[in-house]
Image 1 (tube, rainbow, N blue to C red):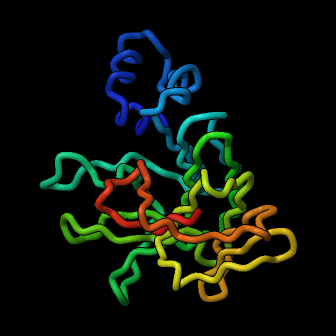
Image 2: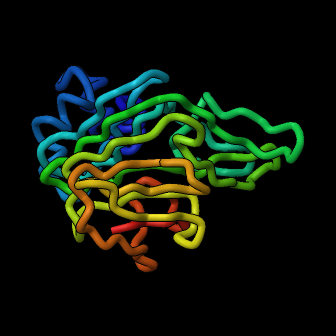
Image 3: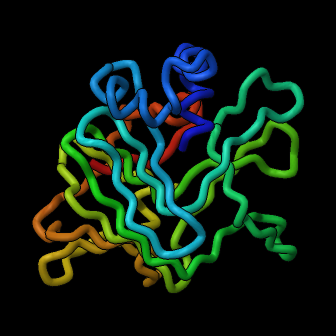
Length: 212
């Protein structure tokens, strides 16, 4: 996501503004993916997508459409820079949700990939964050080239809320019988949450389930 990469990397933004590079994407392709302190977010649209990162680097791979969030009142910077415009408010419980019929393919790279199946969002109460699950409903994500011990699957739910089991040669991640994701060729994987891991794409104070 171009706006976020420039926001995360003001030195790159300055070079782009001065005309030294055309875009942040150009920088990440030529340099950033090979630099340990750089990371990038690769996102889809509101339809069915195939999303992948570059050949190296640290990548967040999101099938949904994402915008750059701004900081709420009282915050210098947002705790999560990803903004999801398809959030819907459940009037009964005043909770937000995303109901999507998207079938997205998220493709891993030789770098470190964070396949994002849930994220944090700002609630209507100032400064309060909630957690939102993706692919609730008929949609699901297909994860390709997941490498255990190197890559992570980010979820809003705790591991106790999920069922993870093989189906043919694949591994399914379900919640209450609803398939959230299918890991291609992952039937033999033994995914476990890493309680010490933190995603570099969120403020470290926000706990998310990271399977590896």
